[in-house]
Amino acid sequence: MQITHVRHYQTDRTIGTLVIEGREIGTTLEDIGRPAGIKIPHETCIPEGEYSATISMSAKFGRPMILLFTNPKRFTCEHDHLIFEGVRVHAGAKTSHTSGCVLIPDQVTLHSLENLIGKSLKSGEPVTWTITREQQ
Image 1 (cartoon, rainbow, N blue to C red):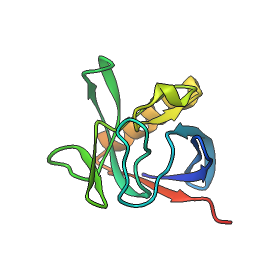
Image 2 (cartoon, rainbow, N blue to C red):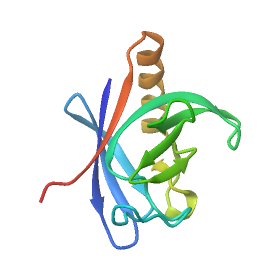
Image 3 (cartoon, rainbow, N blue to C red):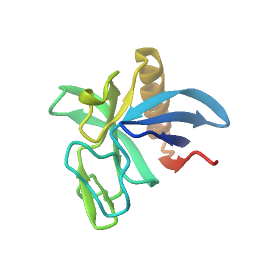
């Protein structure tokens, strides 16, 4: 399964659109996007790029959730010599609800996405989450 996450950068947040098989399925909210190689912990969204997605138990939230990663041994997101740990996709409506994670404001969209990813993984199909920027 291929998920495309198209970002629209703003000065105080990052808004995104999720697309699966050419169909928009929902919106996202993230921390501020920063130049390559710059990270302010808990205040920076993960870099654009290709990530693997899985469903795993979150110790923090106490339930299975979507996890994005590039390093399958550590389940971390590693780009530009930066390491982001525990990058989840979860519910939230304000940037104060994120700590580098991808928020989905609509619970129905979040649960549908979790179900789609879960079905793909159970069938043995890998899930790729590609983050790009809006083309001007």
